[in-house]
Each structure stands twice: as structure tokens, then as C-alpha cells.
Length: 196
Image (cartoon, helix red, strand yellow):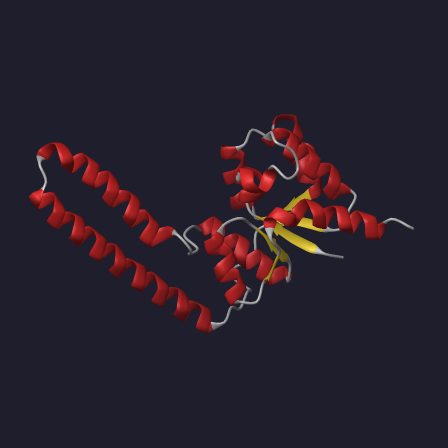
């Protein structure tokens, strides 16, 4: 039996959820229907489920969703992760902080030369570049860590459209699928489960 750990992006990223149906509510409904028939188990950490509920109104779908997707946090105090993972994460964070500092310095120099009307545009540009330098391609929230740890603990397949989460999950050997193939994978599981 396959175990899948789901990230919010499965239901909030249009590039991912539209494989089930164009509108978000219909996509979630179709996911639930397919998931019920796969024989697989689906998990989502409670922090991620709370985040999802803030982003998507599950309305009448919540009971069925919770029946199909097991809401469970990782056992944070029992999980052993490789020390090398922590060293790489710290090194990555340090690199990104330094990169962010260089971007801030560059924009500060430009602001000194800019007219007062251009400063607002410059600050917006700084925020965008700074956010990209510090957050893109890295695990940057407790929800990301919960998804990663739960998938690691359960030896499950991670389903996420978040590139940073996927990158760091791959570093510790978590199984990944392309989230855009998720519907096809569920349909294959149903097909192989059914008697021929």
C-alpha cells in the first residue's frame, strides 16, 4: 500500500490542482473521489491542514476530506534525521543571508543616487529580489518542515509543487512524484487495484 504526504500546493497551486478539474472546489472533490478508490493512504500534517483551511473554503467537503486524508503531525521528538542535512541547511541559510545582504547593499547605493519619486519603486524591487534570494528553493516554514518530517517518518511519497520542499526532501531520500502526474498516478492505482 502506498502512503502519500500532501502539501497545500496540491490544492492551491493551479498548475497542480487543475489536473483534477479547472475550479478549485471541483478539483478537491474529484481528488477525494479518486483517493477513496485507490487503496492508498493520504496524510497531511495538522499545521498544513490549518494552513489549507485558511486558503481554501472546504465547505461541505471537509468531512469527506478528513475521511480520506489522515490529519497527523510527525513525531518530532522521535525522528532522527541525518546531521549532514542540518549542516547543508545551515550552510544554505548562511549563503542566502549573505546574498540578501549584497542585494540590500546594492539597492541602498542606488537609492542614494535616485530621486525621491524613484525610491518607492526601488524599495519594491528590493523586496522582490530579497524575497527571491532568501525564500526560493528552500524550506522556509514550519509547515514545510512538518511535511518533510512526516514523509520521512512514514517513508511516504511526497506530493508538493513547492520546489524548495522537493529539493530538500530529495536530499534526505524522500520519494517524490511530479505533482502534475498525481491524478494519473491515482487513476493507475485504481486500475491496478481493480480485478481485470
